Image (cartoon, rainbow, N blue to C red; front, side, top):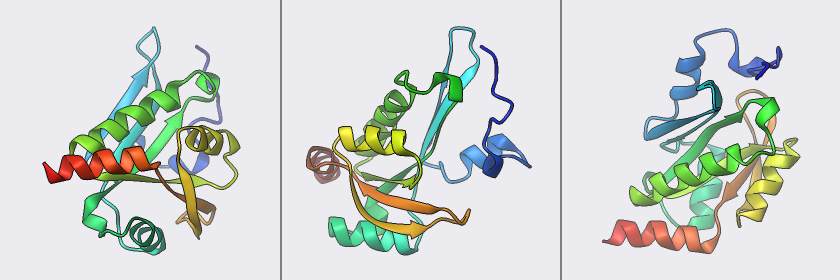
Length: 157
């Protein structure tokens, strides 16, 4: 597969890409590879840090930050988009969060229409917007009721 010269995105360049991908993903991270074993996607889950997004999540879900896991660094090689890589990685991250008894939450850049459409089709909803550390606006999202119930059931057992 030929690589996109603009990949990874500018906000992920300029340092150690592995460190950037892994920093917030301390609860787990996964990489998708193509048939040639080249990385084509990444997702992680990490604890929810204090801030506006955390306030929106905890208010919408009626819980504290410690019961949440943020799906983060969900990136897919441009040539592999719309192939199901992001959806597959997201499912893996959701399962890991649920297995840990945490409710998964996420942010999606406001201008990422395909990502938003995928999340909406999987039952996620926007509970507000915040300004991200990159200066770009983010949709703050929670999963559908079945995922929330599964995570809470896992925590109760």
